Image (cartoon, rainbow, N blue to C red):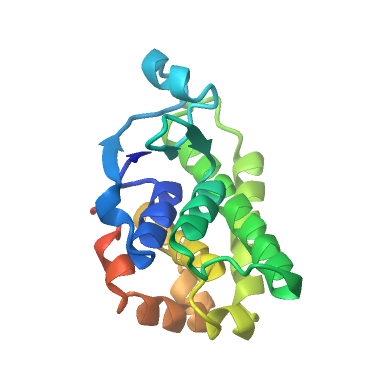
Length: 203
């Protein structure tokens, strides 16, 4: 299998953590890919018109989009437990992950607004609104002991990627001081080889 990725992508990191935990990482070739707003990449657009990372290309040549769907595919392949099979826990995990993905989307848009959009065209209120979505999402998880202290699953993987991306791109945002329970959770998660190995390189 092949996985398109960038070391900076929290979405690709999510899949890498899952693949390591499921014992599948050695079966996956990591293929570096570059995507950026306003920058053409015709070859990658042929793989996915959305031009987003990551994409998994199976041994049969099928293309699987979206980090959650890829994790679900790998989890099923390995007979893993990263995504509950049925019942209330499954829907809770999927809902938590939808929140996490929305937080990552908002953080990425903040990054683009600050670093990519030309000076004089930046919309501060829009950026503040998106950052607030991520920040209040962290506040919600700060008060979710079932996630912070629960079994290692897609919710914990996604939350690790949110906090790691905050460190990577928004190092001065102060999330550790504001959310000590998330800080303790993150420190504990960094003891897992899959989490430690996949930390983004220095910005």
